[in-house]
Image 1: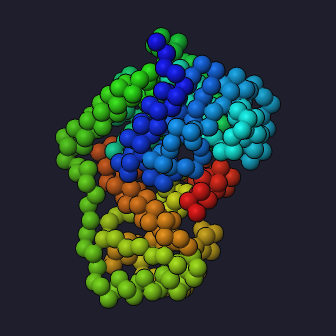
Image 2: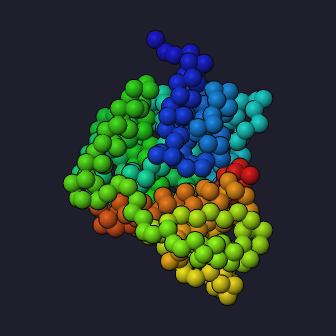
Image 3: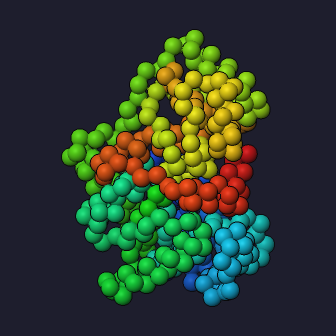
Length: 360
């Protein structure tokens, strides 16, 4: 017997909370959905999985949502995403003022009732690695691996084609999808299927890391001397002004020196500032990258800075996440950074600016 919409929403809320922890997502990353007949209920853009309640999911008409695949879509990336956003908003049922996840069309093409998309560090140690695709094929032969594609409509359209090919070749829809330098999508008709798939995924990866002698705990160095930590904090605050109103600190770790995934670009920026913090160094960084640094890595530890405490805390969490992914990726040939074109798309994408703004 098919569950009622209220039962479905309660189940997907529970799954959102379960997979909305720091082990699986950070900030507004990841998304979840449930289907009931002609309706898709999906997480609002920019909100956190852990904060969701049943009445916070955005309901979309699946028939109207499917128009994104038949409409005349512009080739210009910015025009394209604006048109697709309008089409998605047109599919939202009346009386709702929340913006649906940009990945709504991706959730809709998967025929299972529940979809959970996460960015766990254990998974991304593989999906962000040079030899990730080969490892994925070996460890998870029943899954579909998708090479990196710009998020949004381009990803949804390409995924639609790849899922169709998978169905023709295997006679079923893939229930686990790995997205290169992005994360994993798991679908199922029950909460138990979702949990079982995640348990298999995490257990398999833990065993692989252990067999290769790679710790799943982030390796830290010293915490630095108190006087030097204070001096570096003061230098960051002075150099950044309002953008350095809040500064966080952690022990030394090998922060990633390039863009790993969309989440890292959105919440901690593509590149960290390396070395002693000086006004000249910060000015040079801003001239090179077009923005002030948000993450600083020096011999005194790792620091993050932002205009709000929430953004500073999250930036540091993503810096640690990137360092851990880089460490785990050693199991699969080392980390593979996003290209300049892929990075620039994320940095200029209105959707990601909207997502970052939801932090306040």
